[in-house]
Length: 368
Image (cartoon, rainbow, N blue to C red; front, side):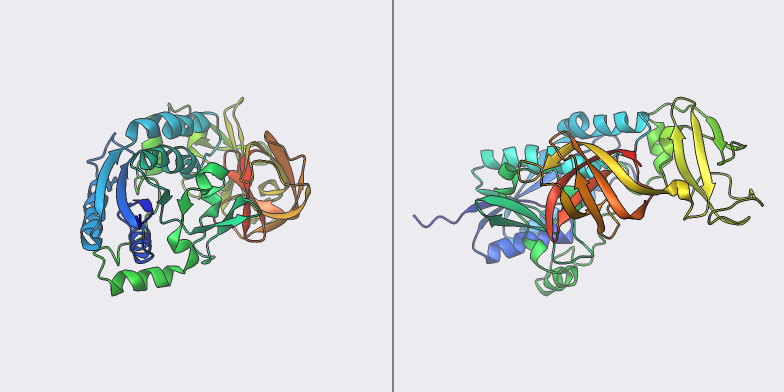
């Protein structure tokens, strides 16, 4: 009669999910942990830490006195996330696999598995919040602005949010670390994860080279002069400064924020002519956009917001930028900005906010 609600926590081996599990136990939930294995291709390499992560997660579960199950989602990950990741790169775009992983694995495959275990809710260590408002569920930014992860969660829907808890979204990262040390978590001082397991700390170009064929071509400056050779357009992203192989070239005629010693940045990719265009100077006009179009939209509320004034991020590590939303639908939308946005990149996500509320977003298809 007094059975406590069952929550299945995604225990990653990191401190955020560990403290999430602890907080849920404190709140009286029956907590079960699941460790998700999402990558197998080179799991024994120096770059993939999933074996150590599981050891850390199991140690946390032991300390907290909760059961932990090791679940392999590698096949689903490869079909639903990695295949799309490669398709996007081969098309010359720069995808964000974390967004797709959340929508397809953590809040779909994992959620389905948790429900089969009799869970009423799932929980993760994301810095975000869920609020019930007017009969629907809102996705809110985490209270710690420096750690907010709502950008990566903008593809979640009402059914997923209704069954999701984000315990650390209500507190700051410093408090998470303090709690972890106070209760003696074995991973209290573990560094935050820096990316996707299948990439990890490895050289990115070396990794992509295993899956995408190279087709070298010319690197040109804004005047059409060939100043180098690229290794394949898939290996470069707009705004990229490192790894261009043209650092020693001087352009005495460079203008618009350049100068003869100004660094070079990737500004455009011409897939038809296999040409990489670069410019000098961070503030070059080719790197600035006052508008963007996005497709493949997802709206958290289930329908697009009304046209009007909002704020948006066109990349994760970016302050919210005031914008005007137009032509919003389930297919896509148009955003106009009052200030130029730097290196707006096709394939990345444009995510819309109304104050702390994440409304949803889409995949950038064009910078204007």
